[in-house]
Length: 91
Length: 315
Image 1: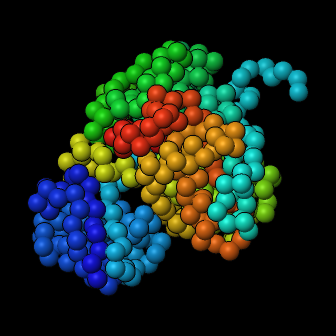
Image 2: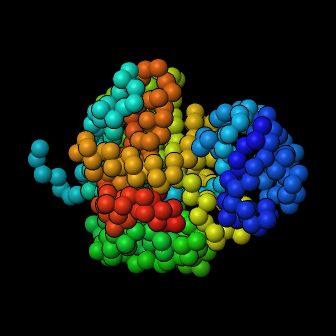
Image 3: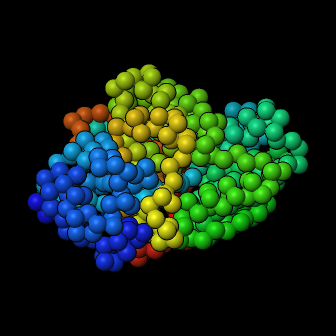
């Protein structure tokens, strides 16, 4: 299922300079896998191990942090939007 | 009410207002807690007072000392106010794309500002402050991002006040900056009632911080992780500048003049209200609108204001 993936500035050089790309899959993990299949250098930026994201990587499904939706197993639907962001502090 | 001995005694004990008129669900009440009523104008007065008091108690902070702190604005302003009253000096380390009003207020309170590149966001200010703390061991470094006195202020203040004023609450929605509010008040409220849900709201700031070299330049405050923040939260949403501006403007209809992060929190609360069947959502309003007027968010062209905000630090 096609999903739009929005990339932060810091990751765009790894994806041909694009700010957003389309990727497919039935879960967040599958969508990320499809993304990495096309842009392999994203893998080290995003993943610590096969199954876990790096510490400072936040992924949101339709603006909702995937950690609270079932993580990489969370299901996605046609037209959903994934946003990848580096963790940033406030205060 | 009789006069207090000094303005710091006015910190905390902030009022709440029913704003259910803005709820998209008639069975869900909305209440906003106005932290902008603190003397320094934000919720950070609680954190700054808690950190300074702890440092004084430990004997680290002695008369005439210099405090140094990374901030996106509010913590700096609160520390500057307390430093002024208690006889300390403050150096605030801050990204150069925070609002002009924040810098003006820091100057008015006699603080010195060390600017860091705006394209590194708050993360750049944190990193610079960490270096400065090593270079200047004579400076006192409260460090809100890893100081337990930060969440403590909310565990002993904000949380109990919310429970006292709205014991029927089902959800707490607050901005996520250091994580202090959510970890401190959130833990207290969940200890009172396990049914209370915590929703965090943050800006999609990572999109604009072009100065980060890679994802490892990201930053997660120890206050949040060591405080068990990730497990404590029930949801975590990003709310963009468009919705933050839109909901800050809606608050004006209720006569509430709140800052942009309040707009974001309210947008999150509206989403929550639409998802749940019934309940009472308490929204923490971190500060008032005054420091953001120059953004144009309440002017004739809110869309342009939101566009400019996407490149600045307003949380």
